[in-house]
Length: 296
Image (cartoon, rainbow, N blue to C red; front, top):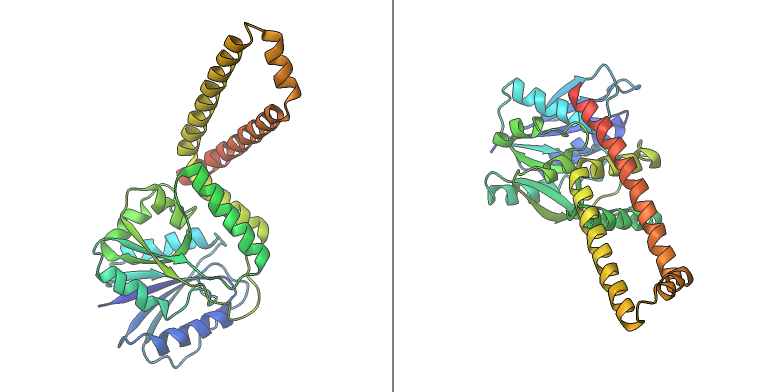
């Protein structure tokens, strides 16, 4: 079995070298191809020499495009240059995707021919605040879309699926969400997230939030349909309630509106409805921007 590990990197060369050492030590393959996508780092690429099992290729991008587009560019490179491998594994280069989990992904992939295997996140090494916000994001993503996106870039892709992935409409925007939105077969396997080897993440909180919202924007049509179903259901139930109230109160319309004005629940509902409408408008704006980027 031949594997090619795709690693997007921006300046995090120390962590990358530690990860490469870990891969060579823990993965029992005679040779492992490594494709590094240097996302226009401001630091010169420094990869240690002396790896006996690793065959390393560095692709340097002229512009900083972000990890998602860098992954897409890397996959296109492998496909267009007919690079031979059975599975491509996408990993972050900072150590949070652990070398020992490669074995887990590959074993599951061998038993699930033609499926993309994602590392679903179990235990994390992040602080409590990040963990709490992450869980809130997963909850709302599921409520809005009906899909559980508790996985990220760390994935094992059969070679025959590469061409389909790079052609996905939003694969340059959000690797995992684009696959989740498509009809491509996939499977999740639980892998605990590791701790960064060096320093802090290069991605700011703002970029993390935007990344999450981009994932939701890809599902905009589904979110809109679910919102309309919720709205119609709520209006229908309200109509039934008002009809029942009229029957009981002998057509006392004044009593109905008086009850609505005096009941705080109605104001809470209207406030939530307003927030949802504003959120939908914002997602639509993001969706339009994403579609424009896909068209370039």
